[in-house]
Structures are given as C-alpha cells and as structure tokens.
Image (cartoon, rainbow, N blue to C red):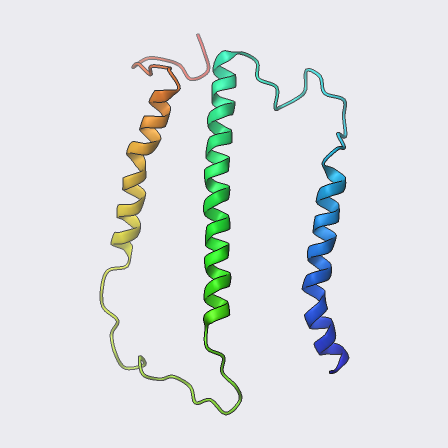
Length: 136
C-alpha cells in the first residue's frame, strides 16, 4: 500500500476521532457565566413552551437527518462498484425519463402544513387578527 492510500483510509477516522474528542471536551465548558444574557433561559411560561416546541422540532429534525445519513450510507455500501475495465452505462442517454419531479416535493411540503398548524395550536396561544407579534 502506498502512503496516499494509507492516508486516504485513515484520514476520515482521524477527523472523526478529533470531532468526538472536541465534542466531549466542549460539553462541560461555558465561555461566560450564565446570567441575564443566557439565550437558553426561558423568560416566562410562553417562552418555556416555545423552548419545548423548539426542542421537539430539533429532536425530530435530528432523527430525520440521522435516518437520511444512515440510508445514504446503506445505499453507498450496497452500490455496485466499477473498475477500470467496466464499460460506461449509456442506456439512458437517448431516452426521456418523463414525469414531473416537482409535484411530489410540493405535495410533501403541503402535507406538513397541517402538522405545523396543529403544533402551533397546541401551544395554547390563540392568534387573532390585529395581534402584534412584538407586543402591545
């Protein structure tokens, strides 16, 4: 094995280990003492509900992100490998794939709107015409 091959195989492991060590070391450190400037301190019951809703959204998005990365890794692992002697796949060069790819994306985005409206309704705050988002 050449040095380039060895480096290419061990570099991702080294980067991953460095990120893990950095994450572990950063867990217990706070650059400033918590006080009135603490962005994570809820300033009331509504702010606490918004914070809980934020944590729920963050957990859901994290789970979806991890699932997508796992699916990507699984697909890359199962993908057939080509070597230098493999001929290129030109079967789709002269055929139209057809379909309208933007419609499923639009439908998926629109199907999330009731979920977001329902989660907003669960917060207990009624939004009426004329309500200011900033306050009186």
